[in-house]
Amino acid sequence: MMQLQQLELRRIALDLVTPFRTSFGTEQLRDILLLHVTTDQGEGWGECVAMAEPAYSAEFVDAAVIVLRDHFWPTLTAGGPITAEEVTERLARYSGHPMSKAALESAVLDAQLRAAGTGLHTYFGGDRDRIPSGVSVGIFDTLDELLAQVQGYVDDGYARIKLKIEPGWDLEPVRLVRELIGPDMGLQVDANTAYDRTDGEHLARLDEYDLLLIEQPLPEEDILGHARLAEAIETPVCLDESIVSLQTAADAIELGAAEIINIKPGRVGGYLEARRIHDLCVDRGVPVWCGGMVETGIGRAANAALAALPGFTLPGDISASSRFYRRDIVTQPITVDDGHVRVPDGPGMGFELDHEFLDSITTWSTTLNAS
Ligand code: SMG
Ligand code: MG
Image (cartoon, helix red, strand yellow):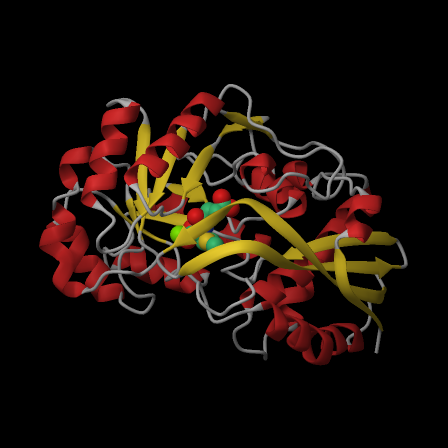
């Protein structure tokens, strides 16, 4: 049991090395909310993966600040001493805001593990010390730019390529990238909900490119549409945005809408729920992989520990920090060697902060006491 004492909410601004365009918008500068919790047994940090705009999902950074400051933190601390495993339960009466809940649970879990002198990797019991690394490639104005970018990632040694697609940017980019990388390298696509139920025949034309999967072609709520599409095309259908909990994962699998699942701890309310979804998928024989939300070294380290679990049989979106950032806020940024990322083995989530740099990019902060 830990007594929570203080929560510092801190916003940082980090430029991306190159704009990241998806079917829902372009990211150029990340506005990231970090949580720093102080307890009677030490400190912990968590990263909130909400974006500045409510486009990937309904959450966004300004809203995360409000819900954490005015609702989650007061309720969490009013209940007395706590373990990380009880955070979700104590916030159960609040609907939505999984990314904010996940960030709070992560910070508490980081503190708890550091106090115990153990790491997330050991806590989860993953059986690998390195995992294959995939890279997510955005949409470009021209095919030449796309191919140059992909060639760069191939040279960096990535184990698989994921292309962002949308209507008008799908068959031709995929054809050319498949030609560039050859038949053996893993290739998959992510539509971020950009298609609808009438696009089945069009999407079936992707079948000839031997893709690992197509991620979230249809809207978040359209489980039936995904099930029908999965019947109609050969490329396995993978859900991202639709999977917001263990329950939605179980239902989507049962309905045939999720042949593969992208697990993102922020989207499902935390690393512990993410682990439960992993266990369910292992039980149901559904392959999973770890998604990414353009995290700093905090989230990237924790994702690597999660992805070391045996059900993560496909390469995740856990790329080198340098894929997005010139400089990370941790002292040992994630790197890719021989197509793999090392699973951190340090205490807590397995990162150490570069405090000087962190302070230099901090744009706002507030410190809250326990209620
Ligand atoms: O962290 O490598 C990463 C980003 C991976 O494509 C990625 N994430 O839908 O899977 C996804 C997107 C969501 C974030 S895009 C701003
Ligand atoms: Mg996705």
